[in-house]
Image (tube, rainbow, N blue to C red; front, side, top):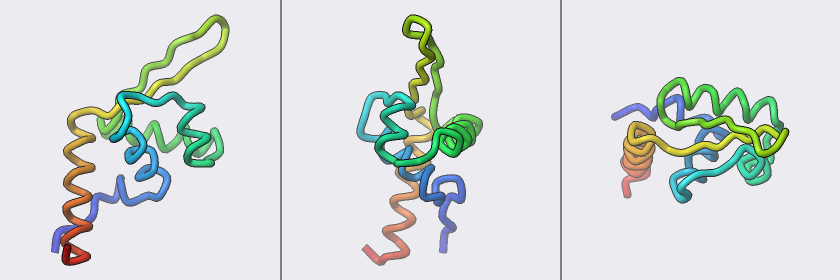
Amino acid sequence: MKELDPLLHSQLRLAIVSILMSAVEADFVYLKEQTQATAGNLSVQIDKLREADYIAVEKTFEGKKPRTVCRMTDTGRRAFEDYVQTVKLYLHL
């Protein structure tokens, strides 16, 4: 049977990608609130998803305040869809 993508199988990374699949983009603060992750852990997991080209990350400033915005990439969308299909195979759906 096909293996689940280990990058997406992490609870927090899967939560991040699930949120981004239903939104055009989401900023760091929103993702932190929705996942209830610590800022440090969220930052590390976002970096892992970015390095895999599953998400795109844009860092800007609003006034003097930093703002990090994340969006799914085509690669990430395909990986998520493949992950969901693999889970369905495991569950015989």
